[in-house]
Image 1: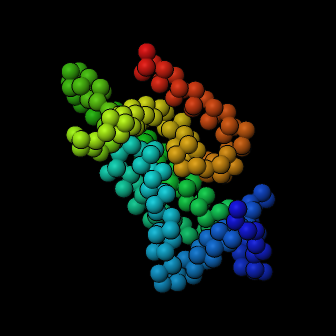
Image 2: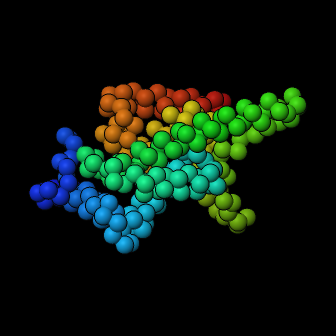
Image 3: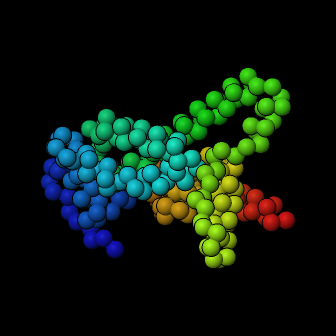
Length: 220
């Protein structure tokens, strides 16, 4: 468990109530202060530190690697231009994830609008074909023909799970990816999503129930 530390006087605003100032959080604060001061190389360091997990979360939510790459670039562009507004009342990671989630919501909303416009311009037969496609579920890279049966089954399971997850509403998908895949705590999810912890627990329970219901229908 990271060791709690004291924040140097005048270094930044006091963290929000309930935020434990660990050595990791203090290091993130120090890096953000360097970014705010436009220290050479500081923002590149921040991107290097946070991009792997942020990119992973975005890919899990959008289920499309090309879209995920574009959204990730938008996220860090927004982080850069908003860096001076960071007030040190949450962990830097939480603040960045909140931006990422909002960008994912925005992207999915625009995607639904584009899809509706596209379908409106097609014939009924063409629209039906596109509606039955599932481009959101990114395929898992295929293994060679000599792959063990157990590995092949794991690949098949991941493909099914990806499709089932992609079929959930965006809010449910975001909750499940951030909790079950990225490992965020209920408290972190509450901060990222701007909800209280009890609401997060209820929404997470319902999202899991929806996913389980889809899995059961798939197995029947």
